[in-house]
Length: 532
Image (tube, rainbow, N blue to C red; front, side):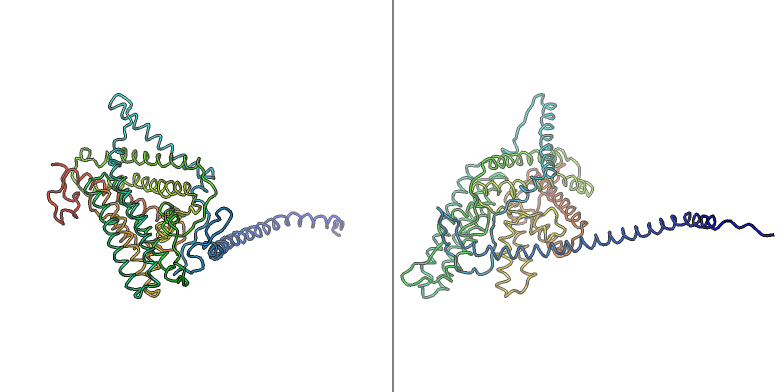
């Protein structure tokens, strides 16, 4: 008995049916594995691509900066065209002692960022907070006094005695305008024919230093102390004192080497920088002297008006921050509680918000608005007064980008001159010396403005700043280090606002009983008892 076999066609159809039932599952699994592998490879390739692009971008940026500097360098020796003609400056054809700063036409970074709606919204948020401060002040005054009062007594006190400030500034300006310039002309006219060039240079330098010490050193301090100027007025006098000293030094440092190298031919007189270029330098927003700078073609008066309004807005912003966030906390009448570690820690953390807001206001009001205002009025084209310091992942980068104007002066006349004198040795010592000088000047300005000695900024700058500069260096690139930088800035500003406010009220509540050295240098807040 034989079994009936299915026809061949049916058998083949059954086999194909079983294969068709199994094949799609295997194919799908295989395809899924391939897709996952491709995705992994794409992710890896994307990471490698980002890393390579970043490295290439950094290297290209450095190469382009060097190429741009080299290409622009010859043209910086030429003055801008006047009536269609281009004239050479007195220093053309002579190489400076080192490759100095190159000025070029470039806008401020915030002006570029404000063209982006997302960034401009942050600016609008700060304006909204200012309006809220204003409304809260009006509301509190109405509740307390039954009427709308918007007094600015703190501003009028801080900027008092502006007449004294004006004549003191006038004396410093006239001296800086005339004495260094004509001293240079006197020295330069005798230098190449004088039998003892070293003796002439030393004698002229000593006399000029003595006069500088009296007029730009002692006079501003005497005016601030003798006339008992209020804090903001003192700050104006002291900052102008420092600015005139730095500008006059830059003028002598940049022009004297050129005169020494430029031996005039027989019958010719030495070539000196023009008086108009020096006068322009005293007002333009840079501390590095050049015979000429890149200039804009016209003044944007709308920009000038807007910038003036922003400066005034920053003044009122600072007023509201102090009145609403600092005075109620640190005024002795409001703090009738004994000193303890708890109250101190709470005071520091409470001061972080006003401290960081004051830091941002000082940056925006001075480094952006004030410098751009003078740059626009003088058609000064190089507006790189700061860089993107807010993106810093290291304190070394933060110090370089926060205030480019002062950093350039310290770099070229402090750091690089130190290396030149030491035959390019002791780089660490050069960096430390610049930090110490900067810390001393910052503390001097604050101490003179407040009228007491309390070296909080000096300690933060010269001790913690130096440590952070070496530990958090440019090798730190991860975003977490930007968080650390901001956290340190928040805490540092909180400490400064807290300690300076406590000392300000301690000086009022517990005045000095003598004028001994230790009385002057010992903070009153350490021993002042508000309970008495």
